[in-house]
Image (cartoon, rainbow, N blue to C red; front, side, top):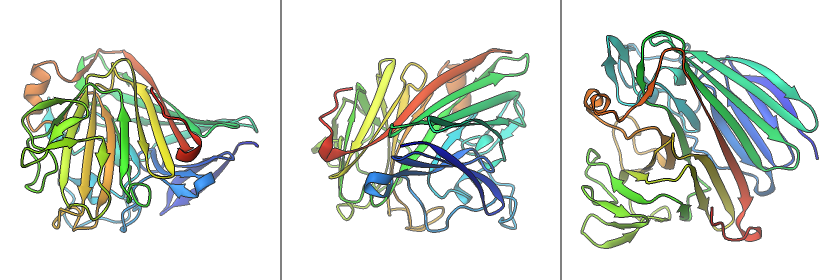
Length: 341
């Protein structure tokens, strides 16, 4: 019963693996500091989405047209990304920013903080190029725990006050979600995003008390019960909000469970994105089947300037550092009592 660490590479990008007897966590400092694997050993299951195109190095694989705002989608394979300092592509005070920000597709520096039978830990660091921002992510596993401890900080290294978005892009895939899944969370409300494709699951335009919602025909719907594969093809984005400071969500399949604890006063909007093989064109080509539950500091918007003007984005002063902690846990459903947060 101990912990260990290994270093390797994926497509000429640095990769670090943290392990104990319960978990194997794959981290990709060579590109975005992604968590590309969250493998629960007792059930031999990786919870995270992995698209068929796999993990590609942006410095080795690229189209003849690179000047687009959608390179995040070009290289998206699944997994768990950190996103900073924005979501929607736009120009912020003269700085052109692509989808989900600068940090997800660039190499990060990393150092091993601890490597002992009791704990393995690594810290990854990146400097944003177009804004004066530095981000740290520290990953740690401890002996005897099926939990990843993640500590993050964002520092404004400049003198100018900045308005930013900060998000955790966590996407789950098969086989974990295939047979249908139950979502428990201490959110207060749910509201569907207006700007989504025609094939929808939820009726937009109204805020409901979680987990109550309405389907596209107005029928009552329990949004906590995610249908099994084959029970409808749709694309959906909804926002779960009204969290206390100690926010959590938990996913349960028939056998496997995953829960995340985070700061609800910082990550005030949990994006529930579902893509169930509905989009047949770019970027998914019918190949994406996922449920993503993404803590963000604000909602997605196609009018970021207005959101900033209205004070909806996270404001960080010159020289200021914002810190937060997250904990991601795996468990067997048939050996765990109902969780009440």
